[in-house]
Length: 198
Image (cartoon, rainbow, N blue to C red; front, side, top):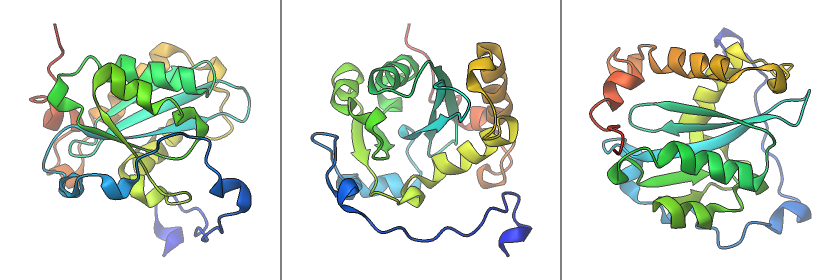
């Protein structure tokens, strides 16, 4: 079954939560349990998931933001996977949208998300945290990251990837028809929601 899938990686096994992981370094996290139940049905635009893609070759990383209803991707290059860089990237990308197009943001427990309160203060989006080792709670973003990895495999040195190449990958994925969207593209679905602020 797994071998038949496009991404035929080995089946993941559940990991135990060790002593180190129990003690979080992220203050004032809000659990995904507190996230509005309406987020699950994907009927409302503006609920986002985020994650970092890292390079084994350098400290340069990528931040990806995926909108749950449209599967719209916002991909940003980071000089390093730090909390300040991640915060700035998220604020820069999402502040261009109207307020009702940024309702919630679901994150993982990486320390790059430690400045979630500053993100909320700057653009008003509510941040929620998935459980440790529960990537399926951000499944939309994880899937899109898998598509990004077709273009940028794990052996890629992100420091050698230009901004233009990243913009091209973002555009290719946002203009790709999806069966789950009735064969519309993410941009087509998002077009009526993503008017930029003047």
